[in-house]
Image (cartoon, rainbow, N blue to C red):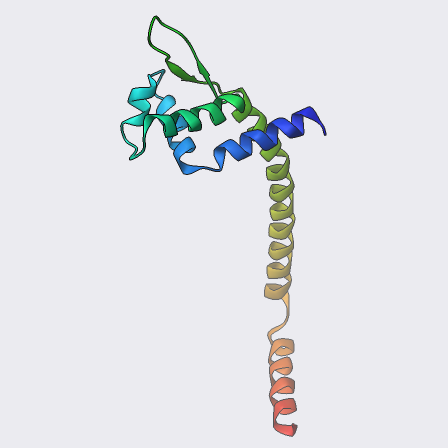
Length: 133
């Protein structure tokens, strides 16, 4: 398997959990301790540590050592990789929407330019066809 694809898979897997996303959101404010990260959650420190290990394996956080403290900080590189991957699909959909917009604009202009008598004739034909059924 392609190492970049494998890294994307581990990043997406780590981001799949709402607790881990909340931890990352907290780390956007700056580095902090495991204890501070655990405060808003109704779970044990070992459970938070498991989440942190998943984030660390995915490269989304790094942990330092400051005497007895183990501060955590956000590592944004995997998020850049996801943004680059998503950008490819964003361009694809933007091109599709641009073509749809062009098509709709052309269709609207053609509809506005069509003579009213043709439109009325079509309506009468449809109504007449329904009566005969």
